[in-house]
Image (cartoon, rainbow, N blue to C red; front, side, top):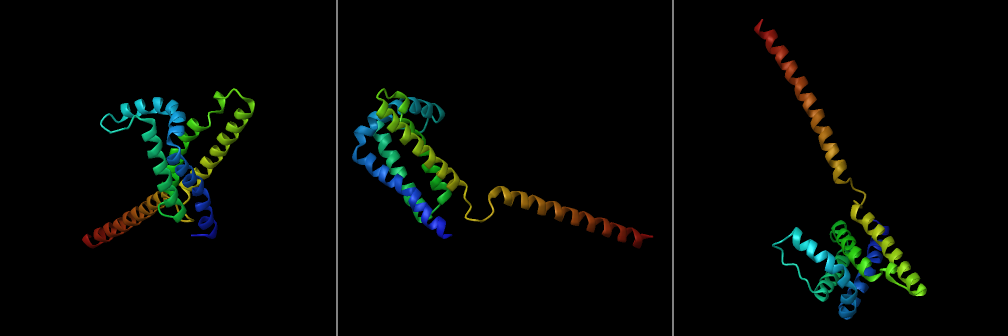
Length: 176
């Protein structure tokens, strides 16, 4: 792991540990804000996965989200499954941002400006998480590996075909 990744991952993860702890400490406040989003998302999730036990209580969902953020942030900070943990954090950040920083609903200009700033900050963090989610630590990614494997197979198939033609030609020569 490079020094940049060694430093950047915990820095990126720190906001989620702090945010998760804050959400656990003030669940009721966060649940009130989250209700607008959970009222829309939960029915859609239940329809998409009818047999899954999806909680409907906003407070429970806030606690689950906080736990997921803390665990994924710890994994990202320590370099354990960094791509997966960054992707999980990105997925958890979207509803958190929509629920917590709905600047378009604010009427007070100062509060609106503050919420807009927080919304943009979260959007920036989301961009960093998306980059971390595709970071391969300098190793080739799956797409490159798949293209390379396909190229290797084509090259080997051509060689096998060439060898087969040569063997067939030798076999014909021996028969005559």
